[in-house]
Amino acid sequence: MTARTRAAAILLAPFFLLFTAVMVLPIGYAVWLSLFTEKQSGLGFGGAESVFTGLGNYRAALGDPAFREGFLVLIGYCLLYIPLLLAGALALALLLDSALARARRFFQLALFLPHAVPGIIAALIWVYLYTPQLSPVVQAMEAGGIGFDFFSPEGALPSVVNIALWEWLGYNMVIFYAALQAIDRSVIEAATVDGAGSWRVALSIKVPLIKASLAMVGLFTVIGSLQLFTEPLILNKGTGSAVTSTWTPNMYAYTAAFDRNDYGLAAAASVLLALTAALLSFAVTRLTGRRKGGRTA
Image 1 (tube, rainbow, N blue to C red):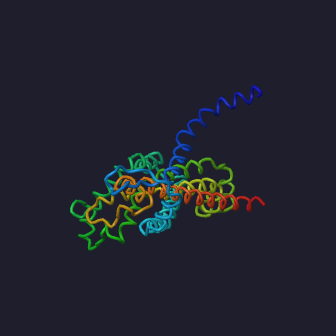
Image 2: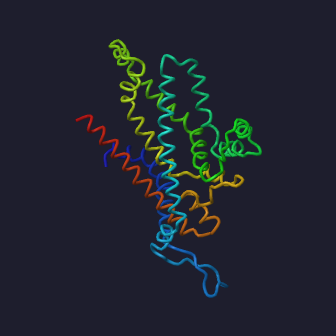
Image 3: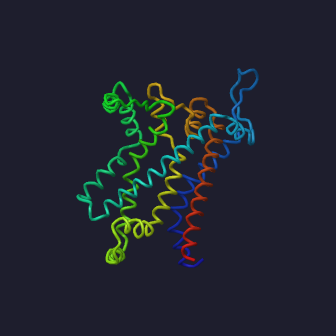
């Protein structure tokens, strides 16, 4: 082993040790745990014992309608949340990058500030704003003749999407704005000299040049959407909420582990969700990579 190889191994060792400790081992333990189930011995008077069940927990999770419906909720959430987040963050970033924007630093801070609020606190704030007996917003809507139940089956999904947008819109706007600031200004000036208007410059020059940032944010947003947990969990505590304890796959796993003490089923549900996230991440990565390759060719 050369001195260069030893130096590289020493520098990379802390990362691989930490990666193994916080990623590889927990995932391996979850897979191992998903292969077992707890059963009472005898007539139920003895202690519980772990019994190898193979893929039994996976069949139980996939056969449970509540778990499958949780994925349908995630699909609806992604179809509503991801386009709104990407379009809203990109529009705000383009506005801040334009010559029309004033007090850019103030608006950057104001838009990013909700992301600094912990997710649980943000969800609690919005549950207060959604509760008819407490919320001045709901009272103002009712005074204007607008009736909308944020906890109803029709309103639960938009309510969760609204909380997530409030938390993450400013964060992704900052990413897009940083990418826009890295664009060579001479390219924009040349387009302006050629007669391109503000809209044409934004859509035909700026947006294509930050597609790498769009792809990265899209990938992270897909992964984050599949991990939906905090917002619906808090919303579940709302009065008459249609959000159940198994509303999303993450909530299903949480309920199985801590309400039913079925850790094998919870681990199996978590592994299935992780596999779904991995497959979608791979699909998004291949799709964006193929588009880049096609443009290069």
